Length: 456
Image (tube, rainbow, N blue to C red; front, side, top):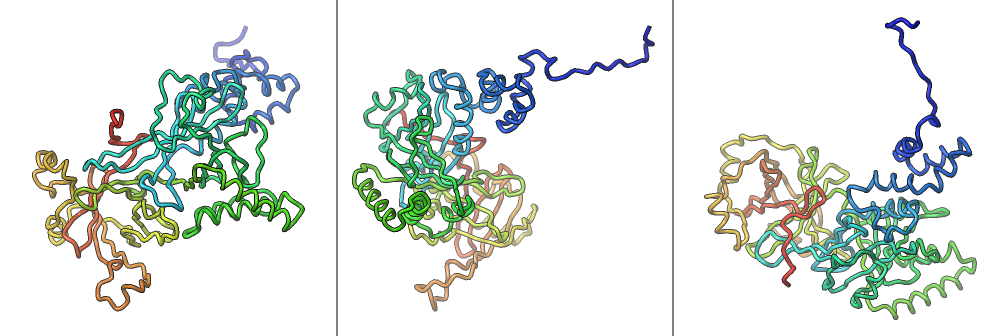
């Protein structure tokens, strides 16, 4: 008889667990881990490769809180295919900025839908308030046959009805929608264009049609693609041309003859299209963090009537730059920042009497529509609670021909950044008498202060 203080251990192998427990454990693994595990025993091959319960559990564990897994493809597709597709879609979630073309909608915001990925154009409202306009324009999903489909609404007039339970018939029901390809180059660049062969890459399988990830092969590395995509001053047209040329040379042995045929096909394709391709660059750091409280997408008024979007980023040399988003969209843009500073050391409150006077002597630019309400909440603008302050000098040694010899260079100006206790901040220059206060565009994956456009 065993003594009470003796501890008995029971050795259990993985096969001793019930099958539902095995599936639960395996759902925590990655596909590569699943493949490796399947190689350990023949009895696990069918469980890992073909059992839909495993791949459903993997999909549900990773994305179940964001979308309805059983509604994708009307619930008639392989969950293994769905897992691989959603893994590609996951990189799209978030904000992307327009590149290479002027636009009044500088942002596109991708988010999870119940059975699709939805893309919405985001732009400042013209109502004299901090509201932003969010227009759904792109729907990406899988049909019941496992085909990837993407539909674009160029005019932003189509509203996806609650009665639409899948994307099988969306393009037929909504005649204003344009079937498009969404081409992901690396992880930071997306090209949305009308259906057709793109980048010299033929995508014949139904599972891959419409969404293509153009990755490097041969001598070109993915990092080189990303450098080409996001390098300042590079044009998307040149990018497209370089990628077409690269794949033509890699896949066609005919040399210059193949390149000429490729260019001719491209000219014919461009002549047939009804809608111009749009290029987008991902905004990776779109929200502030404790270490970088100023970074992200912001909105603010540069005058009493015009709401604008700003992008604040921390650069590789330790500086902080704030740029107008519309300037980043323009081709051949110098991307001149609104302010730039190498000083990132904040001065905590309380501020000195001199600094208090600099702040209190300035007016806060507020929209006319909110001026009366603001006065009721804040008797005066200087009642905002300042958490800390940053001194900046936006001198970044650029030679401006039209300002040569001018005693005042607007790109060389001392200013201040005031961070408030509510997480927002304002900035101003000593040469001016005003403060521009900025608010976050989005928080926790949700756009703040979105305008109601249902009645428009």
